Length: 408
Image (cartoon, rainbow, N blue to C red):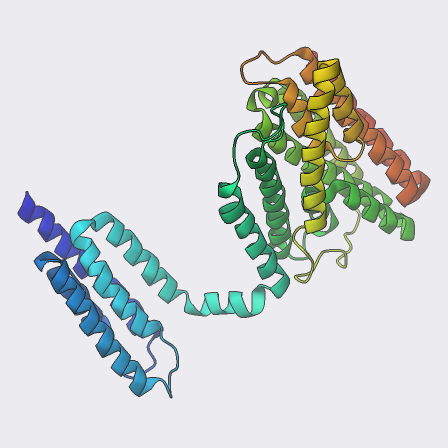
C-alpha cells in the first residue's frame, strides 16, 4: 500500500509538471529561451524525489532551484522583466514535493496554477482595462470588511439588554455591501442592452429610496418615460425587499420562515405590476452607471450600521420598559426611513428560544407599510402626479397582497 501511495504521488507530480510546462510552452514566443514541458516535468519530479528523501534534502533542492532561477532572471531581465516563468518553476518544485504528502491538494493547486498562467491575456485585460480604480477600491473595502473586520468582532452582546451584537450588525453591513457590489458588476456585465429596468433593480440593492427619487426625476424631465420609470422603481423596491429578507434571515431565520409566504406574494405582486407597466416602451441607453461610479456608498452603509445599532439599543430599552409593544412601535417608526435597520430591530421580538409571535409577523408587515407610505410620498415629490399615482397604486397592491398572504 505504501508503494502504491508513493507511486501515485510521483505520478501526480509528473502530471502537474507536464500540465504547467505545456501551458508555459504554449505562451512562449518562438525564438525565446524558456522553461517548457521538459523543464517543468523534471522540476516537479525533482521536488517529489527530494521530499521523499526528507525535509533537509527538499529544502536544499528549493535553495538550489531558487539560485538557478535568480541567475536566469539576472541574465534575461533586460529583455523580459517579468518573473512569471521563474516563479512558476519554483512553484512546480513545491507542488512536486506536496504531491508526495497530499496528492489531491497538489493536483488541485497545479490546475489552479496552470489556469492562472493560461489566462495571462484575459487577466491582464481585466486588471488594466475592464476594472476601474473605483471598482478596485470598492472591492478592497468589501474584502477588508468581510475578511478582516468581521472575524475580529465579538458575537456576544455588549450592552446590558443583550441587543447590541457587533458581529451580527456588521454581518448585515457586509451583506448590504456585497449586494451593492454584485449589482454594480451585473450592470457592467449586461452593458446597455437591457436598459433602465435592470439598472433600477440592481440599484435597489444600494438604495431603493434613492433609485425611486432618481427615476422620478427622469420621469418628470421626460414624461414619455413615466411608465418605464415606474416599472424600474418597482423593481428597485423588489430588490430592496430581497435585501430586507436577507437582513431578516441573518437576524432571525425563524421569523423569516414565518413570513416567507407573504414576502413571496409581495415580490410576485411587484414583479407582475412592473411587467404590466413596462409594456413595450423604448429603453433609454444613457441612464446606466459607469465604471467610475461607486458599487456602494460608504456613507449609506455606515448610516445603516449606526441606525441598526441605535435602533437595537432603543428597541431593547423601550422593550424593557414597555414590553414588546414598545419594540414594535420603534421598528415601525424607523421603517419610514430604513426598512433594513427596522428588520434587525423587529427580529428582537423573535428570540430563538421562543415561538414566533403574531406581533412579530405583523410587525414585518407594519414596517413594509411604513416604507410604502414613505416611498409613495417621495414619488409624488420627485416625479410629479403621474409618476406618483402609478407608484402609489402599485405599492398599495403590493402591501395588500403581502398582508393577505399573512392571513394564510
